[in-house]
Amino acid sequence: MANTDLSAARVAQKNEFYTQWVDIEREVNAYLEYDPDVFRDKTVLLPCDDPEWSNFTKFFALHFADLGIKKLISTSYAPNSNAGASFYTPTLFELDDPDYDPDKSMERGRVFTLLPHDISGDGRVDIDDLEWDYLDGDGDFRSEEVTALRDEADIVITNPPFSLFRAFVSWLAEGNVQFSVIGNMNAITYKEVFPLIRDNRMWLGPTISSGDREFRVPESYPLNAAGTRIGEDGSRYIRVKGVRWFTSIEHGRRHEPLQLMSMADNLKYSKHREVRDAGYERYDNFDAIEVPFTDAIPGDYDGLMGVPITFLDKYNPEQFEIVGSSEGDYPRTKKYGKKERVVDGVRKKSNSGTLSGAIRVDSFGPGTFFDVGYPVRGVYKRLFIKQRRAQ
Ligand SMILES: C[S@@+](CC[C@H](N)C(=O)[O-])C[C@H]1O[C@@H](n2cnc3c(N)ncnc32)[C@H](O)[C@@H]1O
Image (tube, rainbow, N blue to C red; front, side, top):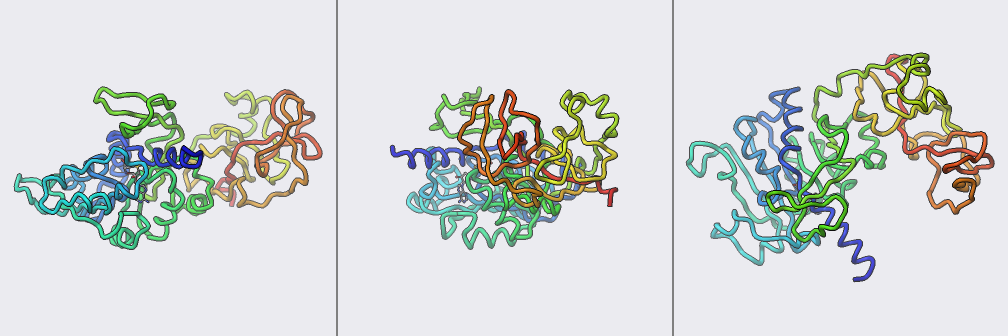
């Protein structure tokens, strides 16, 4: 296989990570704890799904009545359009149906709808009452017909394809719907994502904030890939780092304030040696102090602070304002003419783009530094924040 085909195949495989029931349940419960009526009388759309493989449709169909949902819609993507779906088999919903057409099933997406109608006559409304039809197109979320379903919906929930996360978030933002979607932490500073976070139109969900999450992958997924295993049910699973819910649904955690020590106390008692030893350094290229750990934010500092992106797991918009990030949306006080990487005193080709936040140091010691005319050390992506009471 040519290299480009191989990497396209890898991307397609990464689009086929199926969310576990427990992860959906925990997050939905956190929204319900804040507002028990959050789904009541609402139309809920689950795009990029498939009731045979995905837990989202099953979960919301099971809880349709107790959540008081008005209408549940889920859509799936056509196998022929989907390079990752090597595991495709027709769903039981289709095979049992006189309208099932094997050719159409490969080319078209499907739409599944649940209304408060007990079609099966078993005395309750659940997955057995789900009705389905072929879409006109392949079920791409960007298509006109799925976009029309977005516009009909009050809330959109899914784990969208990994490689289309930026496009998916833009599609949600255009739609002016409430949403909750699974993505990777690294997306926080994407230009399609960060402005929504900064403007409090999107935030992180409360139930995934550290560690890895397991997703179910197709049978074709190579078991020797890092983090894969076969579960007791015979299915394959992969562990993924940095997973988060990105949502615009309210929850309690984002209204709990972070308890913080003063700057003086941090300098004396912080559990992080780096803070006790080096204090709060100023960036060489941003007008802010570097705070390397969220729990070391000095509670009495009113100026601008650079914090790790994991700060968002603790972010309370009544306590802090997010004003920018180190990734190009906040003014730098300096542009470096030259930039050379120096590793353990040895000069290397610097293949990373612009240097994010930089902190001036005395000399090139052991570790990685940059020569910008003088030695600096780079820091990983940072968010710039201010305490609210400072205004
Ligand atoms: C990460 S999986 C998650 C599936 C399911 N939502 C879940 O969490 O269990 C993303 C799904 O989106 C589908 N997909 C890929 N590209 C798509 C597109 N352009 N439009 C709609 N769905 C797409 C994939 O086939 C896959 O089923």
